[in-house]
Length: 283
Image (cartoon, rainbow, N blue to C red):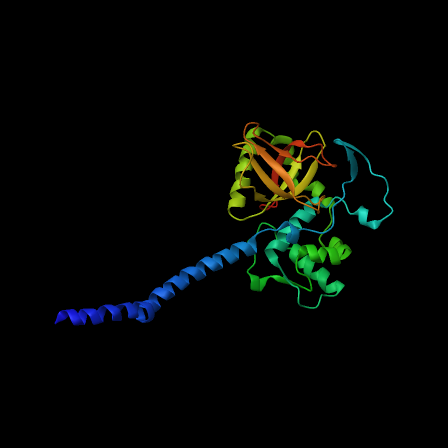
């Protein structure tokens, strides 16, 4: 007499698991897991730095012209566009600040010049090393899809609003290049760089070859490449304000215990020393 009841119980149990109280609990559990994974993925995707979106459309110009690493006086330019120079530190800092503190709303009406300048300054007044703002507290820039779009459409206003370049020459932390120049310090910098990127942070770097002056420049390191041709070497994607067209390449060589930067028209290529800037107060 027990067997018929058992036969009735088993289908009922399966029904309850699939559609009843148990089923609802299991479904809710799986839905919660799916939602958590989806939110985590969306959050990670939202915080990812993208070169084509999160950098400036215009270039910083070097003060001097370079040929194979040798500097010479730049010829006077007839256009105002070419006069924007000495802003590599400012542009790297501002790119990080916009990534942390700004939000864009393409489907809204663009701001007038005065309002837009005020909002840009509100972003740049925030310390670059502080935590990102939640989305609902960010400074809103209406009418543009991203920083690249806005800096292309309102180039001169953006240039005038993000800050002066000359104070970067008098940064206290620049003095490190004169007494923290050993391979040990560069190894520690390499470790800090990898740790920052692993935490999802951005790393603004000061590149120098002091006492030579083949390069004294700031770049924004935003991604470590997943693999390298030589085991032990690390390759990084870099936003260089001098080159708005595409990312540049920075390399760490374990064998040489040193960084190297990509050759280009403004740098002969090869060895550079790297110092982090804007990672904390007075840095």
